[in-house]
Structures are given as structure tokens and as C-alpha cells.
Length: 236
Figure (tube, rainbow, N blue to C red):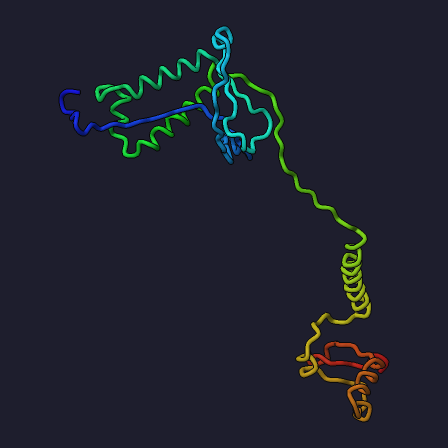
């Protein structure tokens, strides 16, 4: 080593990249944007093959026997692509400061993240490259359904319908009788005159007697000659 490098304290960076099997779950596409969801990588080990077989494909098996990956556990890549990628990586990490790749690695503030970014970009590159193979499959979506038990919901529905019918019937009945619409309020009796009942009829001994006598009383709220409100006995 010559120049600015020191043979006593050399600056050495070691990098190791290898094939892994990637398991992607809960993938979604929202407005054309692909979201990978949950990603889990599994270590792979190469499969020994004959010379003729190695010319076409490089195959790998899962090296972790305790993995929870379901389905196919054997992966293959085009042998030409495998060799090309190895040569490309060798060029990147063997470059000097005068090369674009070498300068980018030298100026990287976090070499680990830089190598991860290279790995991720290459993964998407050969997944969509000319040597990639499209596999047909099925997408699974979740749909929610609401089951209505009409036998249970019929009781409150009937109650609401009866309440509306009672309200409409009250409006029709009071309209036919010519009763002025007014709210049930304790303030109304303070500003109305009660006509047709004698004071002796209003003398009650208990609250129960008041309720009983009130059921028998029928009155009509109307305007008097002076423009005020009065409660007139209907049979008067």
C-alpha cells in the first residue's frame, strides 16, 4: 500500500452480501402506490448441481430449518443474472475515489444504510427485469358484513312507528276540534283563565283525587274577546 495509506493502521471495510428468501405479507395497493406490508427475510444456502444445470439456474434452499415460512422453500435465479450481479457488486466495492460509486461510498455517513439501500434497489430491479417471471396468483381481501336479526329489532321499530302514529293522530284530533297548538308547560295556566268550573269543583283533598278529577275534565284553549287565552269548559 502506497501513498496516503498506512500499512501499520490500514482503514479496512468489509461487506458481505448474500441471497435471502423474502416473505411479504399484507401487501396493499392504494391509489396505484404499492405498500409491501410486513417483510421477513430468510437465509438461503446454495444447492450443489451439475455443470450443465449450473449454466442455466442457480438454486437455493432455506438454511434455517426452524423457519416458519410456508409454501415453497426452494428459490432459483438465472445463472447469467447471478453472475452479472456478482460482477456488478465487485465493481462497486472495488472502485476508487475517482469513480462515481467509490465517491458515494466514501462520502456516506452511514455505510450500513447505504449497503441496505443498494440491496433494496437491486431487489426491485431484478424483480421487474427482463429475466423475471410473472406468476399468477390470487389476492385476498377482507369484507365485513352486518347481519340484522329482524325479530329483535322489530320491537323498537314498532315502538317508534306507534309513537309517530300517536303524534299524527293527536295533531289531526286537535285540528278537527279547533284547538290552538301549544306546548305542555306549567307556565300556560299562569296566563290563562279557567271558565266553566265552579270553585267548589276544584277543591280536592289529595293528589290522587286531583288526578282522578282531572281525567273527567275536558277543556278547550281559545282566545277571549280581549285577545288573551282562556281555558273554557267544553260542555259549557
